[in-house]
Every structure is written in C-alpha cells, then in structure tokens.
Image 1 (cartoon, rainbow, N blue to C red):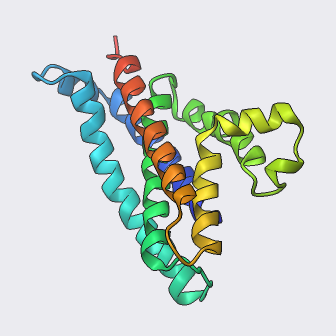
Image 2 (cartoon, one colour; image 1 turned 60 degrees about the vertical axis):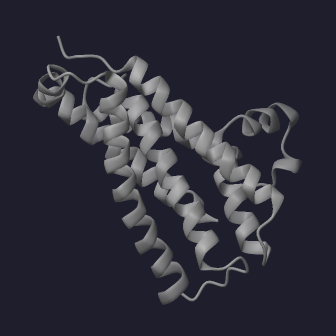
Amino acid sequence: MLLGIFPMIMMFLITSIVTLRERSSGTLNRLMTMPISKSDFIFGYAIAFCLLGFIQALISGGVMLGLLHVTVLGGTIPTMIVAVLAAFLGAALGLFTSAFARSEFQAVQFMPAFLFPQLLVCGLFVARTEMAKPLQWFADVMPLTYSVEAMKQVTINSSWTHNLSRDLIVVAGFAVVALLLGSVTIRRQE
C-alpha cells in the first residue's frame, strides 16, 4: 500500500519547491506577462509534473513488482494507474500549497502539517474501523485515505472492483479541485 503514498509525497515536495523557486526567481512574473491566465499556468505545470510523476510511478512500480517481486493480485496495470493518480494528487496539492509558502523551508514544512495527519489516519498503520469516530470522519474527507484504499483494493482483489473505481474517482476529483484552488490562490510576486 506504500505505492499509494510514496508517489504522492515525492511529487508534493518536488512540485511545491519547484513552483516556489519559479515564483521567487521571477520566472512566474515573466510568465504572467504573457497572455495566459493563472489556470493556464497551473494546468500547464500540472501536465509537466504529472509526466514526471508518471515516470516516477513507473520506476517505483517496476522496482516493487519486478525487482522485489511483491505479489499484487490486481496486476500491473491497475497498480500503475493507482500510483500515477497518487503522483497526480501529490503534484496538484504541491501546486496548491506552494502559493502559501514564502521560502523553500516553508514549502517543506507544509508536508508535516498537511500530509502527516492524513498519513496517520489513512488506514496504513491502524484500520480505520478501529479509530475513534472523529478520526474516521477526518479520514473520510482526506484524499490520502482513498489513495491507500485504492492500492489496497488492487492488492487484495484480482479483478477491477466498484470500490477501486470509486477511490480513483475521489483521488482524481481531489486533484482537480486542488488545481482549481491553486489557480485561484497563486499570486504574482510583488
């Protein structure tokens, strides 16, 4: 199930730091002088980072399935789809949170503040059904929960399930919402 988390965390860090660096170096200001909107900028960066996330997910999945011979009942393709969507979610969240950071150190600090609470309640360490109700409610509205659940579905089921489809739609939906919010919150360096 770590393959549902690893690409997300890596892409969150890479995206938030690189986007912040683009803003602080003045590249964002130069891009914003062109006739593009903020959403064009965000979605363009999202496409580039998703390509990078796709490559990272392929490498991670290749190591897991090929070199380490981890058994996944769902097969290679569903495993890679979940890993790529996790990377897409990480890139989208990184683009969104980079608008609030003023330095690379702050961008990195968003990871423990934003991702670690999700990591603790996503069901990786303790089954969500055994958590207190408020923690279950919190987990139910966090995207990492659905990424981990999707990877769990791929791991234990040999066929594509309705729950897997639902989890992937939720992960993709969270990513799109994060990109839309990122296009609203990104600002020019004054």
